[in-house]
Image (cartoon, rainbow, N blue to C red):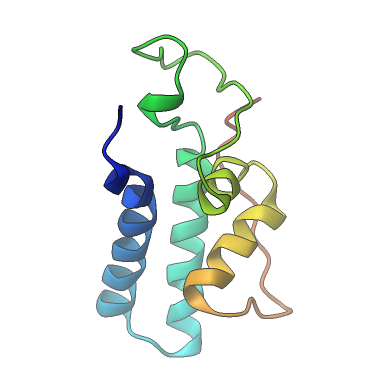
Length: 113
């Protein structure tokens, strides 16, 4: 059985990533959007990660597509569905505030291509 603190590991890592970005670039509007872009790029790549407690076979091979799964909580499920840009935007809104109307994000990584 997994340690209950593992459930929030991803959230802690993403929050730290955002805090480091804001600390490095600053917290004015332009730099918050730069942090948001880096976070969304990272999330679009990391949506391939499946928590070990949910895997059917360990270890997962790098070239395997991630199977559909429901996370252990809402945020874990939302972070797993970041192949859809709208889901990534919702995640970034939770951590960095509302997305501006003129903000446009197109992920570079296609995890299920």
